[in-house]
Length: 184
Image (cartoon, rainbow, N blue to C red; front, side):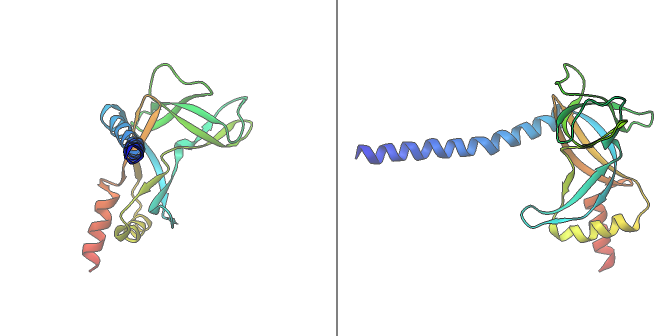
């Protein structure tokens, strides 16, 4: 009887540990959205499909290219990116460094390429997941519009979360729904 009790206790502990990890990730994500500062990134979406993760819009950002003199960085290295806003209110890279910043809005990015005068970065928020039924319409809407695509990213204490993707003055989800309703 004691063995059965130990199995039940062990199962309960393992279940709690397994529940703790995703709950902690969700709470951290929500903390960034509520306490973080909004940065708007100009981007150019494309629509790939990942059989394991579903439909998403892959995002390439103008700000991922950073001019820097005498780069002492290596491809594949993780660096911290300090953000600023340009005159139009869009996000731009202020400074990059290997060590974490003490102040300001920053996040961790990966270096995809290094040249003598420029870094090519990979931001951690480069995928916007979309409901599968809207994915094809979102791709069509973006392909047929000449409106600017802007990602709304919240940044707080080294973490960044992509909240929404805008095409013109609508979210890509709303634009896709509108396209679906007018094409039927």
